[in-house]
Length: 368
Image (cartoon, helix red, strand yellow):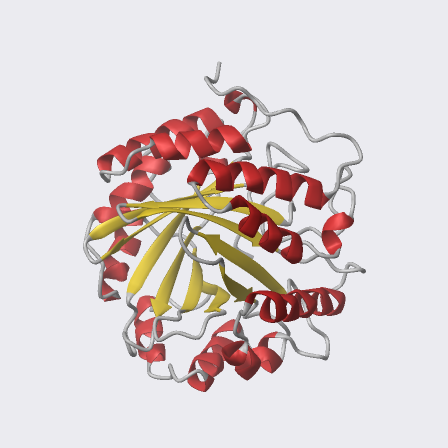
């Protein structure tokens, strides 16, 4: 049996905001973050769509979690400290991408107005990722980062496959050029030299802050690749340590070669200071299809943190605030774990689904 005491299941008739704010307050308090300030940001991100009742199935199957839940909590651990994060997709009034665009833009305007988020760079590429005619797929996801000191910071994730006018690669290249990172395309092409069918661009990330270190991120989903091969490709990053991420992947996936049930994900991060070369590369290992249950995932993550010199107590404490059932009774809480090395110091992030609709979600994003 799990050593965790499960949190009571969500009450019948509860809203998405009921779940997210209650859970967020527990996580923020455990991490030493200003709970009142964080809860205010969460409520803004959930307005007005968070007032919907959770129900038994999603009206809009969100890209945020494997089971369609539109909310994902995560925590980043490093020698510098702990961050709690939340990723959300504002739910549309109708189940179509045009409505999702309106909901996402409303949330963006609220974050700019109420929390000082900066939308200048987003405005330069909005027409690429939020087309007016025949949009498809998800529109935009929003994330907030909470640390013990400072105000929350926000970022967005955009859809490179927003319509059929351009391929994901073409849209990403144009966006980078508009943002002053046109020369970065050489590094992206080298990183994805198997072609964008096998190394598929899936997200385009932007920080909503006005700062020289503000990041542009390009995310990839990798098909039919071994951890060792992907690790070698990540040497393109200025901060990469060869061998580190390959071993991390093997550890968390149970020693598999090519991770086939659910593809590996990565991102390359660019800043003005780094110029045309990525300042970091991050690997995301899918956990739910490659573990028997969340207890196995917990043990693997704890072991990986020990190997990285990161204390696992904080992770286990936060997990106690996420799990509403014994960890052995499902495998849907842990979605991904990611790692990167920055300035010689490792960082691990673990991502958690609320399991609003399924504790045994199927694999997603199969090729073809």
